[in-house]
Image (cartoon, rainbow, N blue to C red; front, side):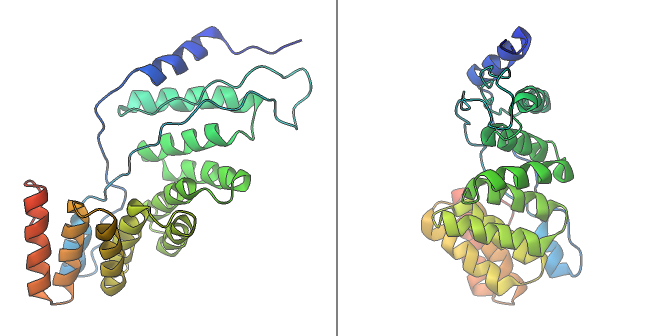
Length: 241
């Protein structure tokens, strides 16, 4: 006997997959106030990477399920930008995970939605479960690193960003986020190195120029700081100076 997913859940997932909304970002890192230089360094909003479009989940039943539980896994929804969208994505993932608790795409979808809602502690177990299934997934490491950083677990965050870069050395967001986290720990020299790597991957990365300029300023290197902040302002006229 086949177990079926209620029609309204399938419709909800389909609607999320087909509805495109304008993307917004939220700060990923809390304010850190040890010194005036540090306050300037961490006041900038951490750039939130776009959520990747999650493909249709595998339809084969999980090995741990009984033969009766063979309903197709609902497609992991494409995450849009409103809180309602994220909550719907979580509910849809919940429904699928009841039948297929080891489905990587659904775990990652729910983790990302929780992160976007600011539920960082709730996101961590899903990122970790997803990484047990795919221990080389750079996107999951980067997402978990963002959650750790938001919870001020900076060493764990830096470790996860480094793992993300091990599996995807061209991930400019992982370089940027690791640099931002290193700013939180006042390790501005290492942060500058990360921002430089991000800029090497994307020469128009205004936020990386701005963060590097702030890091240079914190190290009392005004010439370099001015050049980077002016470059950031040129690339993004509304960037803070």
